[in-house]
Image (cartoon, rainbow, N blue to C red; front, top):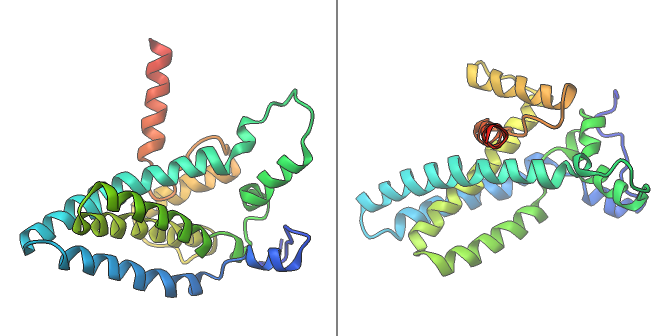
Length: 216
């Protein structure tokens, strides 16, 4: 489709417009938010040694590499690709199928739509609020903000990479080329595989788990 903003997903014009996301506007909100989380993670630590430790362990290892990559895999596999779980022998449910299509499948059909590819601020508002509430009850503030820095930072990296896979610019890194190739296979070869956009970690983990279960 030549027009990069040509599809209409919802009959209500206001709802359809609100479903679009202009990435530059989203970044203007998220970059200050992430910067604030990073600063608070350092500021609220009892010492600079603890601040560095929190940043390495909770921001990068737990927040980004562990929590965000799993969040990305889980939502992409189980919530966005619900068409994979449809019972092909069941009566068609037009409303349910339309909901599945408007949530994510449209991105596989019209891959070049620029304003329907990244997460919207309403989604961020929901899961950041819940994460803030839960983490504030479970851990100290310095660790909480370090975790949020890594987790929300991971989602921004996800959006940046996902957008660049479809609209460029391409980055001259082997890891980037590997992940883009995997995402293109997910789109054009088999959408039941390779759900990771920023990392193949959980794709490999769940494949190995399924293989182990079959062997047992």
